[in-house]
Image 1: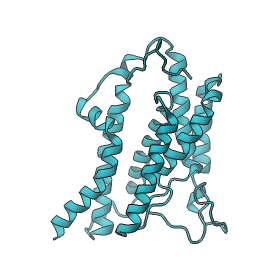
Image 2: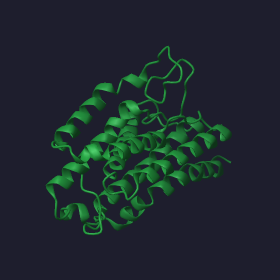
Image 3: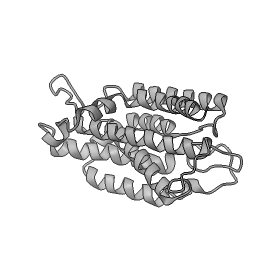
Length: 242
C-alpha cells in the first residue's frame, strides 16, 4: 500500500469526506429517534423494535468502520490515530457510566476503531506486500458476514467481550467487538489498497471531487460531531419535555 511521501504528496479524497458527512447526519437523526423512543417515551412505532432500526444502525456503523479502515493509507500516523480513538472510547465509557442516562457503553464503535487501527498500524508492512487486495477485501467481507451472529449470543466466559464473546454479566449500550466488526474495518483497508494499486499516479476524479461542500466539511470534523451530538440532543429533549 503506497504511503504518502515527500515525492508523493497526500491527496485529500473529498468524496470520502462527503460520504462521512452524510453518515454523520444519518447518525444524528438515528440517535434523535432512539432518544425519543427509549429515553423520553415518545411513540415511534415505525422505529422502535423494527427491522428498519437495525438496518439504519448498520448502515451507519458499517460505513464508519469501512471508511476508518480506508484511512489507514491516508493517515500520517496510525498509532496516534489509534490512541485518539482509544482515549475517546475511554471518555465515552466514563461519561455514560457517570451520566447513567442509558446503559454505559463498553467496547463501542470507538473502541473497535482504536483496536483495529492499532492492529492495522502493525500490519501495514504485510498489507503493502499483498498481491491480491481485492480478493482480501472480499475475504474480509465474507468473514464479517459469517461471524456477525457471534456477539448476539452469551458465552460462559468472562473478560472476552472485547473480542466478541460477551459473558453472562456483560452489557453495553453500544457494542462493536473486534469480531466481527474488525473485518469490516479490514475490508476498508484492502479497498484503499486496491484503489492505490490501480491508481498509482493519481486518484480518480470522482474520489477527489467535492460533491457537496457542506457535507464534506461536516465529514472532516466527524469526531467532533460524534462527541457533541448526543449531549446536544439530550439537552434539546430536556427543553422539549420540560
